[in-house]
Image 1 (cartoon, one colour):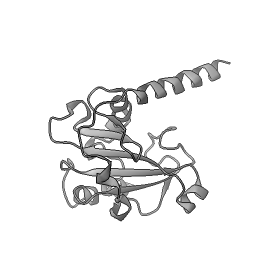
Image 2 (cartoon, helix red, strand yellow):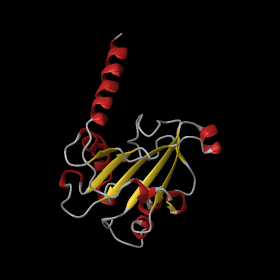
Image 3 (cartoon, one colour):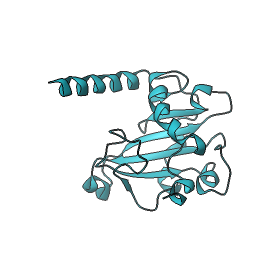
Length: 172
């Protein structure tokens, strides 16, 4: 009974955090509509918990994920440009619930990181976190979504809060 209560409380906390969003600061959803044409940061789909910090987010341990980076952020992600990412960098993560959904490219969940101008969201090191292709759920500053997302991404502070990049693969 205690485990169910703790799991339920954790899930409700997650939902509450995600419901508290902020007004958009970066580009609108049209900025990532062609993300599949961008640089693909991972050579194979990520599954399991490659970073050690995933838990149940981004479709959890059974998911298949691909990460795409726009041309502004590509040099940084590839390791040919230094950190931090330049403003206007966009990182899109596709998450599929399982291998079949991935192979069919069926209904991916999109989570997006958008690098803002310096000082636009100091609490998130100038990243805007976005859930969903439409870009309606956004988090900056101290909004619940920003706090939730950035709380995990602080584990990748040395690579400007982005887990999957050339530095990640060099250290594998």
